Length: 332
Image 1 (cartoon, one colour):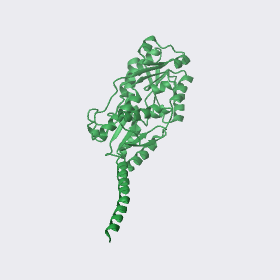
Image 2: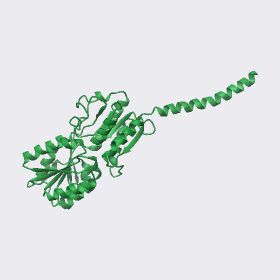
Image 3: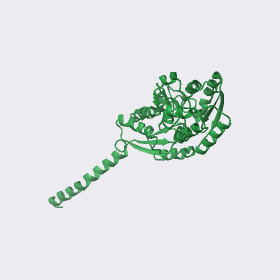
Image 4: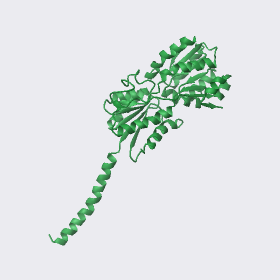
């Protein structure tokens, strides 16, 4: 082959090869983006934007942006807990690098789906009592994240109800039996009720129609107030729950402020949004090489008291000044 022809041929080959090599490099770069599975038991509800947005904000503060240096795979159970195992299995088949699971049912589904992929809990009442981790200091296995320590708060919520209504003698506790954390809160609730001379009624609901039946049962038993235990189905249905309580003139206490924003009377507990945002720090640490087994469970350091005076007025209640002075937020 003449030298000139050889040079031309070589030039053509290089012209073709260089873009191919670049494309190949780009493909490899895209393939190396960490893929994070997000497992939510709720519906993709625009009314609760700040929870998922809080997690995304936490990621942004740490330098992660979906589609640029990280890929997020969302799965929503639409309030149907029985869908969670299948959704968790989907994420495992996608070979995600990590699963962020919101709430006990999601965590349980993720735990059953994989013993090797790291799992970050974004909200759970008591991860030790529910068997998700071995201890708060050393979780062990492939799970770590944030605990909201809800069982420790039920007694305080009961005391607040008694302050609001000293004559209250019967309190209903609304719980979702499919949520493992609710079982861990029953004993503290019973202990607090006994100490305050209150008779406790445990009522269960898994979905909107069962919530309706639960409030009918609460009315039939003539409960004077309701404590709603933390649950993502209840969070989705917070307006429905608040409407039931107002119609039946029942003072109601919740764990999360989102319920009060939705028309509930009073909440005392940790910030859900803070829990979601802090979960992003665990994602960051694991992506940088930390093992879930070695990352201590995060716990809230502050608890927020929020009161809806508008709802109090509708219920015909006067909130004691002592409680108002302690409130972190008040809806007028």
